[in-house]
Length: 114
Length: 114
DNA sequence: TTGATATATTATTGTCAACTTATATTTGGG
DNA sequence: CCCAAATATAAGTTGACAATAATATATCAA
Image (cartoon, rainbow over all chains, first blue to last red):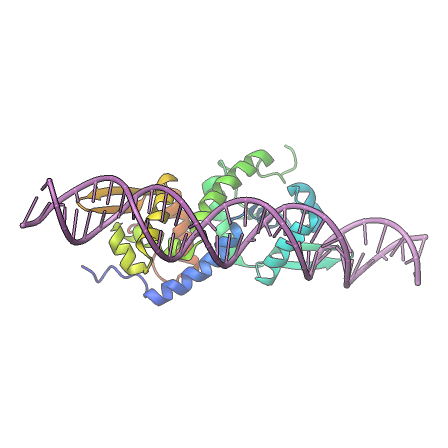
């Protein structure tokens, strides 16, 4: 029974895969993943991230720049500081799944229920 | 209680992040993602994958070799063919999430409910 | 305006992952 | 045993990404 086989058209699947891979590439770096976890839990400015993640500032700003241009995060200036938060809800969903799978029996990155 | 802020200890979080990143790196490649999607949907041999994904055989075997050594997939020989399937259930969970998020209103890679 | 702090950008470099080409291994048929 | 098909492995090349170093921009305070 091949009828039940094709879940989605091949071209659409390729398009979806391209989108997914773009997101996955951004997550597939330890420091960047930790960074996203942190701002998913609480909006943070660069210097806070720098301290808690122990990443040099230019590297951090470079990574944040990529995430900003890709629409993954929001940047809001408040005085001298720039505060970052997650913008793309799909990223949050993936982060939640990763929490559920890899973090030893702890709650996910969202506050309330989901 | 401490603060309610720290969801997980920093070292444990780093360890979890390392694990997650290992998995994410394997997913963060379009051909490999499509490959995993296909064998998540139906156990396939190399030549089937080669045809449906349009990847050259050595590249394919190389990728499959990595996935095999990392315990992500199962390889079972049947005559001249080697059939691959997903071994790591965590990969399946991530794939399901990606389906849900990026595939336009279609069902996930698992048959039943979860 | 000047200085200090916070963040961003640019250029350079080093590392790693994936593709290609070529060759090796396994299996079944004759 | 020999051949062809299916799959795996190895060596060499290339390209992309991230870290570093240096510099630039923005904001506030004096």
